[in-house]
Length: 130
Image (tube, rainbow, N blue to C red; front, side, top):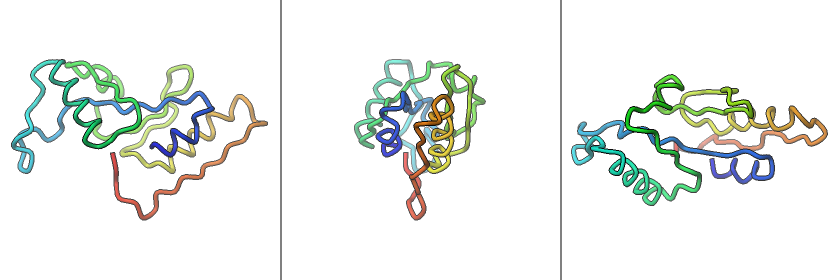
């Protein structure tokens, strides 16, 4: 995602990762991970994620009721492209950078076709990343 963020930096595109909840709290392999007790706890865990994974894009933290996540369909690991009017222009499970790149390329040139930008990111051979 950081490559895409750099590519679209001059195109008024903002990248945000939404931190919703701990998806496997208490499960096998995640016994030490617990559900959030309050919003301060949730914010601290989001900061820890940012630090541990060296996340370079903005992390948005959903409220305790997960209102934003619910409004977007309440599905796990989704990626969305939201257009200037606030509508979902693209959605998909996981973060397929090449598909997001294609959707963004179409959106950023829709209002100015004289400034073409073409999808260039390929994630073939890469493992899934946050």
